[in-house]
Length: 112
Image (cartoon, rainbow, N blue to C red; front, top):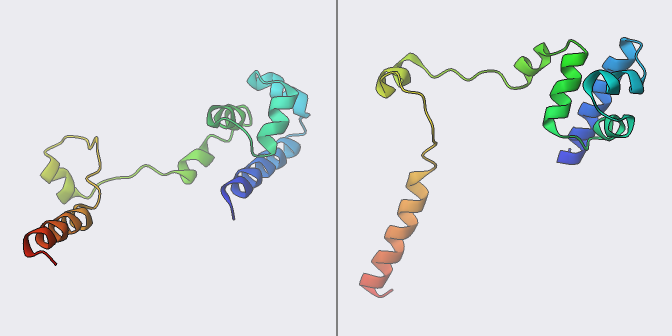
């Protein structure tokens, strides 16, 4: 599925939750502070993430966010290595970039 198709599917599922609660689009939009047109865009997959969260809150479905992106927990050994600090950055793949630069340096030195 494309990103747009996934967004549209999420919108469709949110709209299904609204229908199960027997709410009109206008009622839900009013509860969240959106226009009905903005809500229709959300259902179509063209919404700001904050609006999706607000709609889930209005539908009392915030628990869905926990399963959507569960909190990541580092292993106990990783936490010991970090000495209680919280990670702020990812290191990326050091090996691939370092090898490429070493190869280019060797080529210059060896004149291959």
